[in-house]
Image (cartoon, rainbow, N blue to C red; front, side, top):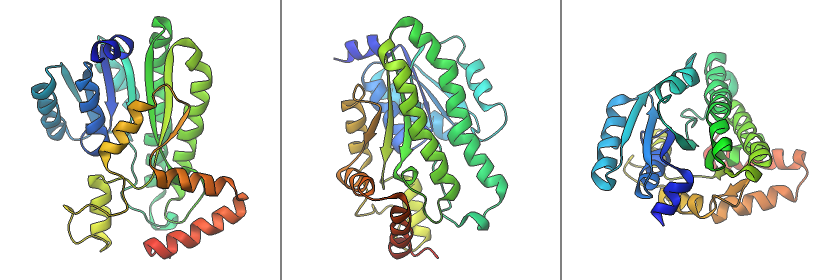
Length: 273
């Protein structure tokens, strides 16, 4: 099975946001299926640690790239550092919101950086890596989205907007590429048990420790399992029963009512103003 997977999607995969959480787990799962992996994030020391573990467990080649995806020229730097590789699988998992604050409480530069990281760079990377996949008639692209992109809500103004972009971008890219041998999915996550979520909830007093798992969060292993089970079931993959239930509920409502419900729900559950 791994040989077949590697033939279809290899020999190299690039994973943006690979330093921890879902991105690191996705990289490990790709390596387990025989792909060499390029690990991309800001923190080189952490990436090197992840890479060492992957090589020890799976015996594949690794490369680490420390790039700030919100910075200028990020996509160009990635393209230059991978010019010698045949990348057959692209995963864009970067772009979580570490703040969960009202739009006007953050700087406009913070919002602009989120648009750069969550919208501009994944679009640039897909435009760079997809043409060779199309020429080979094989490949895969996974763009991570969020339920925050379904409907606007408080404390997620810029973040939710970027995730709406990611969702529609993945759907549209699928419409153009799935008939050319390139599998594209927009992987939409709800509340997921990642280090970033634990840190946020600990800061808000919801968790006693960052080592504690939120009771209502989907385990990272479930995300990975659903992603690989649905690589050919694009364009949009909703992860978890809760996420699928929310999507069904929102689809049954008009957008104004849904936005009001979202505002009330976040205010009640998360204590936003």
